[in-house]
Image (cartoon, rainbow, N blue to C red; front, side):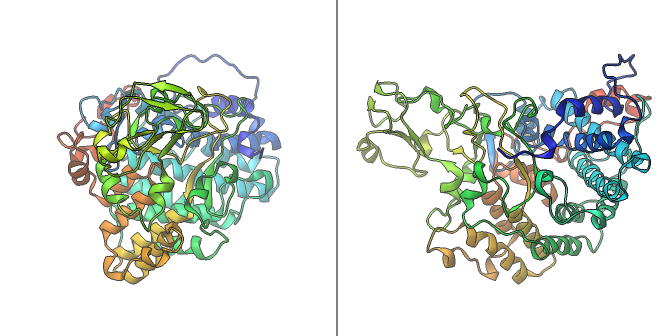
Length: 553
């Protein structure tokens, strides 16, 4: 099992985070000292390294978690709600989406915890007893992370409290910075980090921020800025330049097979630019990557099936919309991504004769272990054709909130038992296919349709079934924004990008109304921002007058 820096010394790191954080306290409280770590610990070689590692840990609050998934995939054109779970206000955009929802505060507080840790490392670096080279590298990493955290906050909440110095004690003096000032700080941090970052992580340091990760982040930031109130004439050109740098100046390459990108045994591969590290070590894994839980259908109460590790623990939180399945993944002859994105076959692990069937072409089924129990063809088979099959066939007219095509990208067969939630799969924050798609988007907006087509075709060729490469290539006349939006859906489904994609394109409301019937009656332009957590307003001196709520909440 590979070992990564971020998974080490978690106990010490957790104490260190408590030591340096102040911003996320709910109020000015009397605090009990729970650690013997002194204020100068961060100046020691180990303390400095521990603090830098701790700054990464807040990424685990957003990526590979239910709260991160809720604010990035709910309420879009590609996913609807499943039968179970809460927080559906993020999908329905109804009265459930209130400033008091705890996920809003969880994301807010933990992200500021990460920011404050970054601030502490940056400010205290001059006194740290480490080499100048190490100081420069760690400070550069912290500037990337701080920029990354602020970008997430900005996209979700709009203008937030901009703190670029360490908060040493709880404070009630906070205010909302402008979007322009936050973009300025984000870009300044990323550009300042570039000269001192390494081109590639080394050995046990795999997972640290690198120069290409920072350039990839800049491409993403400039794309978002280009369609914001803070836009500048050269935003899209800068996005294209940084995306091109990542593609051309390093050793990244797309893996030959789309499915192999999600092979859990090959998480350190040529396509990954930056990932959040998880592990099978329960002591250091925290809540783990739990995305394996949320996309699964209710297979485990069906004939011939019981829950097992391989097929996952299905929480039934998200199911693909009709638009997702019938339009985005319409091509299943040339494009392999429907087949390699969704699980279509379940093998019987509970032998016997069963009468509890959902397939109305039969009244009972009998299975031996290893037989096919459930098959999802992805199209409407006639009742007569289904009757010929010895297994149950789940067709589109039978899809519901419990039975639907299951996203298999995040299934985690390395879990120790069938109920285990803390998955060990790394979360890929940046991968090269996304970079090509960002380049295509920037070039298309710049009017460089041919260049956009060429970037998009790189991704499409990789997705082709054997012998179908030519059929997957689009012509310049096909290179439209609609094609780009669908392509991002095919390539990045479920990868915590869609809500912010729609926000960036400025069509969240339109596309939710068009493709998300559950949310269509409620979604409005106010939903381009989340509510500011009520806890933040309550703990601000002056309350809403000093830290105003976003309009409409």
